[in-house]
Image 1 (cartoon, rainbow, N blue to C red):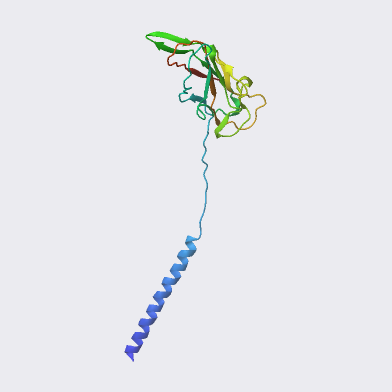
Image 2: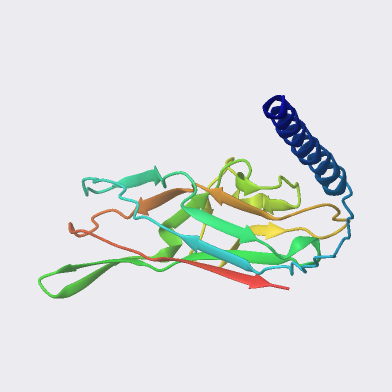
Length: 204
């Protein structure tokens, strides 16, 4: 009889202990569910950037045979060989210009020349958006559009940003693949000729 009572008490003890564990678990869960929140502020300022530009590549116009009349030869630069990246937002304008040196070559240490007045250029119908936001403010001057060739022996305006009445975003990179034409004079000495196109930018 005493053994049976001890066993029952022992079992009750186990039940009591188990009950305590369950209650403790419930209390812990209730305590964890009380979550308090706070907040903080993160601030950052993004400033406007600058206007950058560039040109790449060499355009080979091929060959032409000299004679008593000779003639013209032309070719096009690869896509986006000339480009302008504008990160100044809409408040800043810019103008680019392009100009060619004379074509020069050498025959037995004697320099031969085709004058820069014989070098012409035409751009695409419109600048090509390479990245960023499209905006009609980025334009070519009327003289340099694809319709006609214009001499670039002197500086000619190329890309520019028209800020008159400008609104909206202008973060963008625009490019162009211009055509170049050279008029070769009659009886031009036969050799390889080379000129340099100078691409400049003025930002406001």
